[in-house]
Length: 159
Image (cartoon, rainbow, N blue to C red; front, side):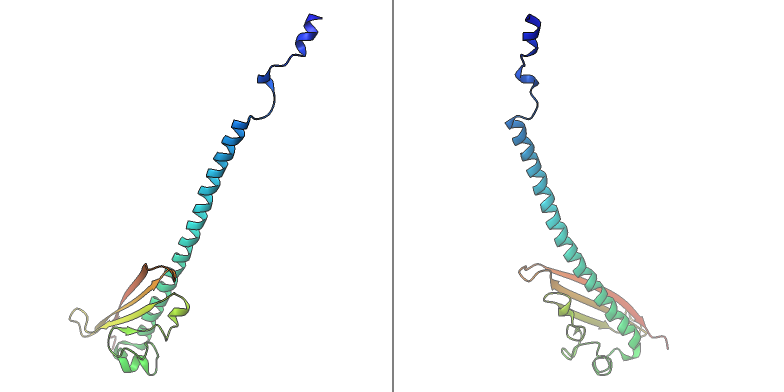
């Protein structure tokens, strides 16, 4: 009888399950992981948005320089660039020119300025022109920080 009585006595250390302290500690650890993950998702979303804006600015600047190469070296003046080709805006009439309106840059980037500087001759060579396309924008309407992308190309007289 002494042996049977001992088998029914359980010690508390052998109970199955978690203590309240263990559950609280695991909930705290889980909460910290969730907060870190949520903040990284928010940051990655914002970074992706800014990267998309930079990609758009790169595309617009490259397109502008490609347009100027298609026009040709001999037609890199205000009259030619506004009349037949509509490469620059009607104002200003001297370098740096603007191309915000003709390319609808405001449709792609918030609060943009888009300028085009044409330097002829370049490095003393009458057959070269340096073209600098620059776009500046604010990444968000409520922010004061601006982003800028500049692309430089050389257009030569092949005649």
